[in-house]
Image (cartoon, rainbow, N blue to C red; front, side, top):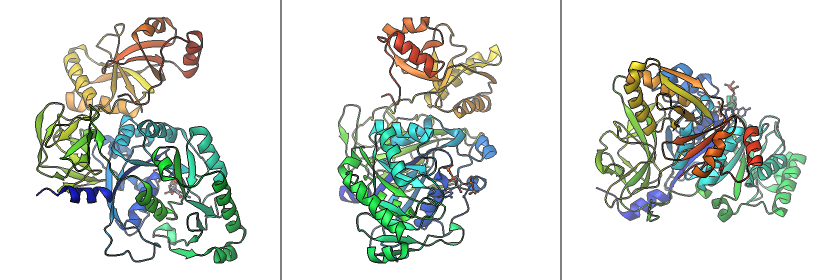
Amino acid sequence: MSSSPDTIAREVRRRRTFAIISHPDAGKSTMTEALALHARMISEAGAVHGKAGRKATVSDWMEMEKARGISVSSTALQFNYTPTGLANDDPDPSALPNVINLVDTPGHADFSEDTYRVLTAVDAAVMLIDAAKGLEPQTLKLFQVCRHRGIPVITVVNKWDRPGQTPLELIDEISERIGLTPTPLYVPVGIAGDFRGLYDRRSGKYIKFSRTAGGAKIAPEELLDAETAAATEADAWTAAVEESELLSEMGQDHDQELFLAGETSPMIFTSAMLNFGVRQLLEALVSYAPAPAGRADVDGTVREVTDPFSAVVFKVQAGMDSSHRDRLAYMRIVSGEFERGMVVTHAQTGRPFATKYAQAVFGRDRSTVDTAFPGDVVGLVNATALAPGDTLFDGPRVEFPPIGSFAPEHFATLRARTAGKYKQFRKAMDQLESEGVVQVLRNNTRGDASPVLAAVGPMQFEVVTARMLAEFTVETLLEPLGYSLARRTDENSSAELDRQRGVEVFTRTDGALLALFSDKWRLQYIEKEHPDLTLEPLVAAG
Ligand code: G4P
């Protein structure tokens, strides 16, 4: 039996769906584990601290994943969280817990277009930065996508237990470099490397943390009033209060409207390793991150969350099981209630799609899911017809706008090792391209036998060559090309661009004309010499 719109609305209100955007080593895995600890999904942290243990939390579907111990796929973690006063308080048994969906953004060497696509499935992002390193390239790239898509961002300064910059230096860096104004919810008491607790700017109280052995348990918290805090922490407390006053003078207090508009970012200081500040992050997500909302379709009509079922596919994972040609599509539910077994319609083909084997995707374990609501992520097996950006629906037809593709930075030509395999090669290329594994660029000079693959991360190439061989028995030759950035151009500019050294123009399968440049200096030179050429940066199309 389907739930009433009221029930759906209630389920939506208690949901928060977010992703963590960070540069490798900022502490995303440790933070994910700390969140799971606070949600009492696990009783002790430490299993996945560091690289060695990470295999335990990621899916091990592809051989490549097993070999490297990293995740090729995007997985989603769902947990309940009941907001509490202090961490050591017993949760109120009558309160309905919040449902938190944490969608994983693959990072490290597996940084790819999927990393970006995940951001189309979330309602908020947590920008996790290392207190010593500040903003790093991968975080910046992901942040750009958040900005482009209007995703509100909560900033977490992690590793406060280690020496690093001052809060004001970090705040200035973020404001100046990315134009996002941090509005700290708490100011740390104790400089980086001497993390004692947090000054809660809203209540004026002090949350004092205690360490647990190896940071394995939730850190006990004590809530102290200002007077007691001043007496116990002396200068560290005074400094925190002064910093907070300075921030207020500069207008850097949390403002929900500005946060949702992407202009400000609530900021929290944490040590994921010691489990300090993790509860405060969960509370901020519950209090400020938006609940799932309706989504505009291709015609601009909004499918409201309480409307009949609809969902967007944001990721397709293939080749998990080479004997079955298994294919798992991840969908984010946009509206209505999902019930396993439902037969829904695939908007792109108009064909029915049976969801008998829907799965909730929790890292390694694939458990079946029976019902799910807007904001939730569900994996669909045998999803051969589904591609990223596709819509599934029940009831009135709906089709959401395509996800679009992201700015590639790695380019290589690919061809079949033996000419006799050309037909399979083309078929495989079409297939992989339609799944969104890689972008494919063509031009008349190069011809169809060796198209140019364009990727956000180099691992996308490895996935292509591995799957060509495993699923289509085509051995391939991949040759990196000396280009490192792309700009969108048009017919009028392309002839002139093609005449330039270190530039080549291609047509992408979606029809976009892309000019590739060897490096940014080449691009800058050409922009200066030919100011009337169309050269637009790519973030996300569509
Ligand atoms: P990632 O997923 O973002 O790549 O980061 P990950 O959690 O793997 O953390 C990267 C390193 O930073 C790990 O150390 C981890 O223990 C450490 N780390 C994460 N959060 C904190 C924190 O709040 N404080 C401190 N001091 N360290 C933190 P590692 O040396 O790679 O592994 P290990 O020796 O700790 O096992």
